[in-house]
Length: 121
Image (cartoon, rainbow, N blue to C red; front, side):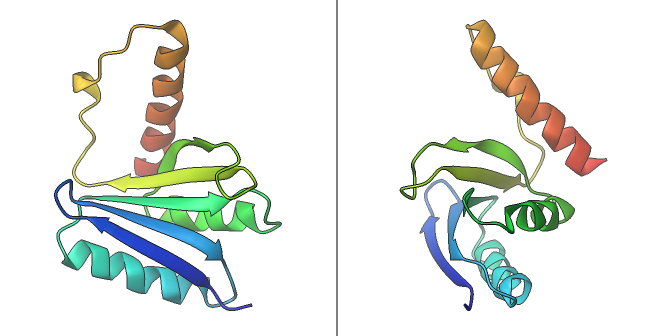
């Protein structure tokens, strides 16, 4: 199947949301076109939503990590199946500006920040 992607731009927040409905053999070329378009339009955050039920999800995640995307969250039942949010943030995220109060929230933030650091290394 060919790649099927939907993109929504939130210009006020400069965020592009890229929903990957299907990822075919043409995924890299198709995705890079959508990403380039979003960046050319001034988006500073690109979020990619992926279906975790796909057998090739590991390959997609590694490809995106190689392009600077890091873990953003889990999307339970988002597509009728669980999903994964990956994101690229330009410039550096304002980690110091995030104020959380529960131990669980702090642990999640630490996991996200650790993943960002490993992608940026």
